[in-house]
Image 1: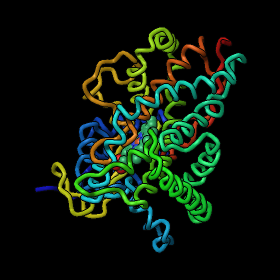
Image 2: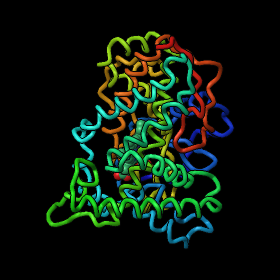
Image 3: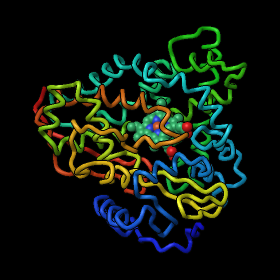
Length: 404
Ligand code: HEM
């Protein structure tokens, strides 16, 4: 007989009270030792790797993003209601259909074809500061890096990179605290992006190219294909999900490696270790710290009853340090051999659609940076974003290194 989660005796964690991110991680570790679930001032948090994966793979738990449009005062907003059809918020058969249709366009092979372009973009950005021997890696490299890649992926020309960058900044305001105030800007950017992508779709229909939009337009499965609205929605989802994540993750990975000079040097000398460096730095310092789900019905999971509507946070940070999965989890080791995947790309039906692309972007950038920035050290202090933001990393990453 399952016990209602409301009645369970659970460890308490208050991450806001815990202070900095290291204190919050230790607080989660303390709770994880006691139980796979902990109570927070906002609801519950799942702490163990097995259960973070378990709940993310359990289709009865739905994406917390679908709840965004039901925020008090915003229930009737047409724009937010339309966002409910985003791949990130869809569930059930609707989500499965979209995922099935778009998956062939997001294989490791389609990420492969962008690798030379990624190297070109990273190299041209490093060239702007490498002779000075110092930089703010966030402003000088991480921020500008993903936009050209997403534009190249979609098939948008170089002269429009700036437009995409501005749209991305405004659309990202959806994650800020003052949604009511920001909504007009968000809507304007979103409408402009929609118009742009619709025009690009028309062009690609008559002149297909080697890009994501052409691939998506061509995809057809058993007579089913993507509508223009779905194509536009996917372009927006890719821009939303694929830029801030990658730029923050790259900054997190470099910040971590700056504290491990031997591994930075190893990466410069052995670029083939890049894949290991990406997985391990994403495990130890991931840009996505957690996600959320809500119970779409009364759910019995293990021996716990989650009443319909219960919100549950899934801690990627805690899962990524679970000693049941990783030996010596506190140690960064880019040559670590593990059969279990780090959790920063999520799990289950919403597992990051762009994981192959993001991995390729990071795998191409890190060895170039390691080679071009020898004897790397942090110059003063890193400014970290508040730990409450959904996609997290350094706001400023001042670095010094031997000029090249
Ligand atoms: C290091 C960079 C990245 C990280 C850490 C990351 C992380 C994630 C996570 C954790 C999720 C699942 C969210 C959840 O279950 O609630 C997700 C979903 C998604 N990601 Fe990524 N992501 C990254 C890069 C990218 C890129 C480059 C793209 C675009 C090409 C992308 C596109 C998407 C999409 C479309 C989804 C939604 C998939 C679905 O709901 O079926 N991501 N990502």
